[in-house]
Length: 371
Image (cartoon, rainbow, N blue to C red; front, side):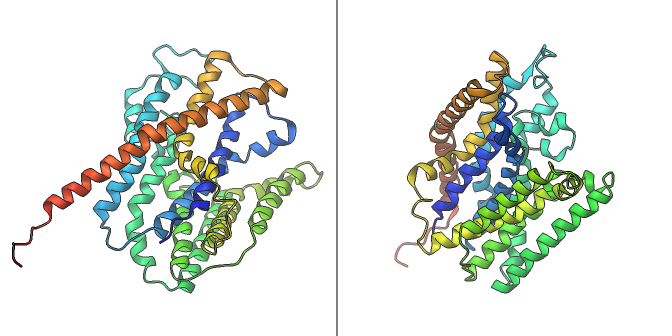
């Protein structure tokens, strides 16, 4: 299947949204931006949908489960381990300062859970956000990767219509689950680990990618998903300020993750369709694609940079000073993500993949001469 560079570029904007969400721990953004930034964490939903879409779009039947798992491990683990080591001095101390609430006492067991990508199975915040706080999502990704070959076995039997109906079913289940949690906030479902509760996002991406593989190529103007995202966020923010609508805004806001997941999926299929029809020249601009390629490193390192600055200099307030520090932290995070991508992520992944390929080649039987 052809590479989708415009989709790679979208990864940068999702990572940037998460950065904007977290930067509020260092600076105060101008009024409207500060309000909009509260939705930045939803970039994670985009990543989960995109992960399911890209893995299924690029899936090849000749790749066995062992190879798939090793390649996924090679893709995410080396950089995870390096960024965890970078994060520990920022987020841990043998004698933490109570004024620095983000610094925790060194806990070998919790850090081991982080190293093994198991911290995301806990709903306890001191474990969930332990180690490198951003890496809890990798627990979910690892779980998604584990399920991918088995879900693919089901999806590959579906027609285009069947895959689209499966996507609709996933959305219905997601909204139904959210409704159940809102009426039973202390029930068993509400306390399920995040990898299980977020699996629907990954599977939605898988279903839509399989519909693409079966020939679905929707003609949706880019303004549609972008406009709907702006309308949803703007509507939530505006209605919260209107007497009599605040309660409605709060009720609708409980479904924001599900609504945004659907709209992110719509954005992904829109951009993928445009690219397959050769209409994404601007979105395939090399700088944006490069940022998308660095986005995994950026996502894993930005919180460490942010809190390192806060630890040394404290919070920086708002106004021009806040915007200056916003820009500086962003620039340092991007520069460090480039270094990590070029000197850690890409070479180690390539080396690990070659190692497995060499082992497989060595085990392959040699044909006798003359046959």
